Length: 301
Image (tube, rainbow, N blue to C red; front, side, top):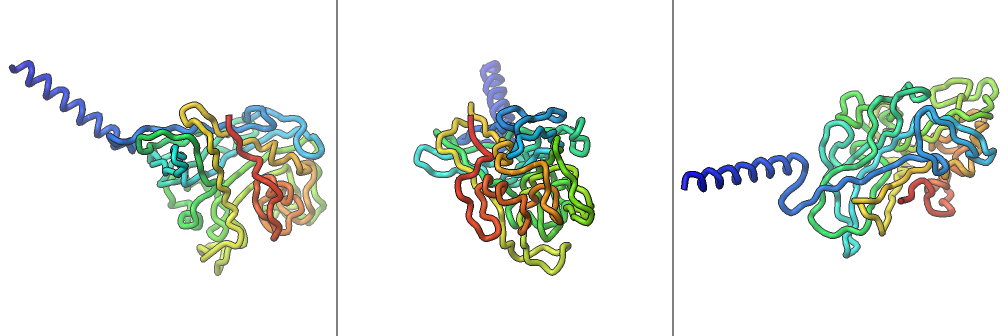
């Protein structure tokens, strides 16, 4: 009798510990864990700091990337009824906060020395127990979180390298690279930081034309939100991988030159001659012109 009681007590204790662990991971008795894998590529080749990639852009240039990271939010799985079910993200204190996650493919080595050593290639959380057939997410930081002080924000919104200013908010996508044929602009041409010479080609996507009293005050709205909604109706979260290929975005761009008086590459700001092919490949309107096709950055495998 005593042995039976001891066994029952042990089982109950184990169950309680398991329930507590699941609760801490965002799980419940009626939910299931999910981990959505992401990968970064340049023209089909895996992204890696220190690697160079040929045949990029209209000049078939060779580029050496120095950064590649982006924010996603409102991640959801598509159930068998076609409904988008939000993923309850694991609040890990590093890569995920509320409904926001940062994917980071640079490791702070070689040409990526201005980055960070940590990398993150998955979005993790839980969903109600069900059968899921697809995935959906938004590239970008939600407006309510986008225009605040990053120096006091929780991780992953405390990375100042991913931030412009209070008015513009965060860089939803940050990709930087040097190219083999990069030509420096004429003296007097500007860059994102007011420098005279461009040293590479960048793609920084974020909200622009944001109405605010100053660069240190949060705006009431942005004329160009520039958030991308990505949806794959057929995606197995247990086996599939979401692939971000910057080579596809740069295919129509000349990565060896920079429009005079503009930031190096495309920083999403209006009136930049380098932006039309880049923004079009991201499936986003630019300078009042709608994109001519679907986005080319994300695919699945």
